[in-house]
Image (cartoon, rainbow, N blue to C red; front, top):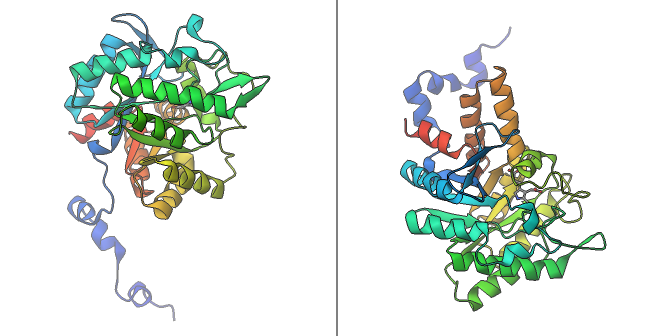
Length: 333
Ligand code: PBG
């Protein structure tokens, strides 16, 4: 005779705690709050002007004055930090990304303006060179090669300039070897002991960055790919070695990027190192959700919230996401 369900389960029935909203809330293991959100914003030159980004509907490039307004809005919503990414005018881009180390470049002007107007929000800046190079690579290009050590020198100078402008966290996304230790030394030597480092420790050579490259204007410029410095999507152990190196060199926090296709990496990094771990829900992830939602194929709002909760379940302490203000509004009820 077939056993009854109660005989099989020993009387335990997992559906009992799923029966009502109150009981589901009571046993929920993970929770998304506004404190988990970092909002990446795109910058352009000019005043009181926005630009649409075709592949990222709902995301705009902002002039510095409007980025300040955006930061004010984010702070009101309780979002802890913004991360700025500049779209540099083409005439200012060159082989070595020299505008990256200019004190009054777009990213540093935005930091100063946001710091002055919204001192309560954290500012995260990227020290990679790709917005500033005329070839779209994150480092210095010499004879077809992204040269590591010269790139690190340039990235270090960019990072110190960003700290001088008021950045709270330097987040280098370039994946050059040794850049975390070099940035840490330079920050300390220049009196920026309080500036933290969030390493893009496991950044994969991913096709999910496409819309971002449109946003900062590198898609038409990029020659070749970034496989010689980003991690192969096939690899996990290499990601752990990279994370270990960045932590030893002095990173306070680490990031996994892209996000949703790499939740396994988030989990492995968190369990292995037990340090503040972040995921970047990148532009292509945003674009996929928005495109499907615009077609009526998915419920965009629910998928957005579920995708963000998934990062918490995978062990992340927070998420860089273009959805940050929208998610914050929903979380505020
Ligand atoms: C490059 C950089 C990238 C992103 C942020 N900084 C990737 C790239 O262009 O190769 C991606 C962000 C996104 O896709 O949302 N340093």
